[in-house]
Amino acid sequence: MSKIIEHKKQIVSEIADKLRNSKSTILVDYRGLDVAEVTELRKQLREAGVDFKVYKNTMTRRATEEAELTELNETLVGPTAIAFSDEDVVAPAKILNNFAKDHDALEIKGGVIEGNVASLEQIKELADLPNYEGLVSMLLSVLQAPVRNFAYVTKAVAEQKEEQGA
Image (cartoon, rainbow, N blue to C red):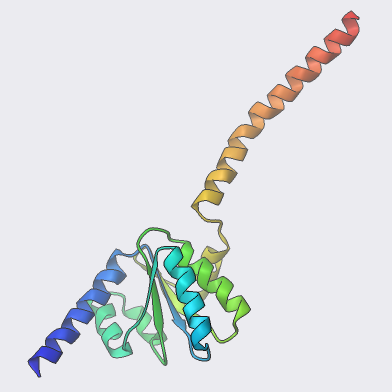
């Protein structure tokens, strides 16, 4: 009997560590998805480096208490799968939100973003943000615009002087 309890304690501490150490954690209700759909979802998440697991709600509740995230307990009703991301804050929210748009059965319940419990609205806002590469691209285009405009003005002035000189 004690081996089982020890195993459960290990699982609880594993969940608590993941809750504390992940940049973002999203809880979803996957009820109604068939095996092929869940497999496709897992594949998309795995490609993005997101860990997607199903744990017993009682063990997850104990882990949330250990990680001091008890606000999540109200979302731990019914079948719950958890997506943990250690690297990208946006990836799990974006993938799960896009998947939920195509599959009505998947429902985002809530989550944790960088150690703070997030509401459903905050997760959807996060999902609408571009990923890291997209943000870098936007930043570079903003930084490049003044230089490009200066080059256009310089060229126009040079052409105008050329026309006046001819």
